[in-house]
Image (cartoon, rainbow, N blue to C red; front, side, top):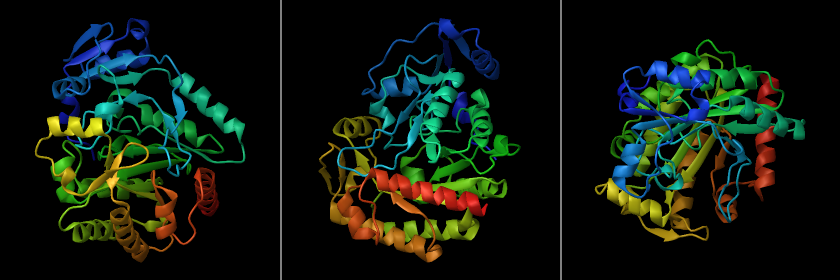
Length: 371
């Protein structure tokens, strides 16, 4: 099962940094797109607030080396409980076009960017794992781009799966909105890789997640990955409030329950729609008919706009109750929520980031012990 082939066919220019033009990964990418114009050099930066600039970024690919660290703690958000996640910056930006995507304003890059520094990534991960050998660390490639979308060009995921399979206390999460999982079939994750999908009702996917796989294809891919021995993650993020949302989200959970084995779901995140002022301006310019802003929002202490707290609590209570009806043992957490919301919706909420990170550690240990 693969993503629609047109998703990478839109690329019309490959830029190769002169410093890496002889690198095997640069050659592999050139060979994978033989009909695409290749240029040696560095593309000029573009203002990411302009719609034409973002469209141009999604049609260009830049292969280069990093000038800084490639493995970093998730920055989180001020006043929020974070989960202690570590971000692998193997690539930046995405050819898909979700209306709410933070990358539209968060990244000032001239093209979709792929870094060739896998050796450096391995070294940084191993240094982190050695720092606390009795603690499980979670790493992911899907924060600054989709984890699977470029795999036909790079082969990153297969190599990272093999790398993490040999670690004692490292867990890799590959987040995606594609259904491109066929290339993962022959890998042996040894319990150390999670394949995750963002899920939303079909009508939300059609309206605000262009160029992504349908909900049904995502669920089918998740089932296949479970059968192949992978742990599965699900992300109800962002939850979008609209007329009829209750029936729509309940329907998503019912479809998940019919297809997936809950004992092979390692975690589920829940989070409401949020955005910055700059992000909203960009969304309005690029998608003037978007339904995203039909609710009531306020500017929170971290500068992001969110649904009113009472609205978020109501949304979360409903969705979590449906998930608990499916299986009361599901591990559910919030992405970037405040302590007040946790306390209103969980019987034993974490008090801070450290406590939530420890809950993940306990969850992973228990599942790996039981196989």
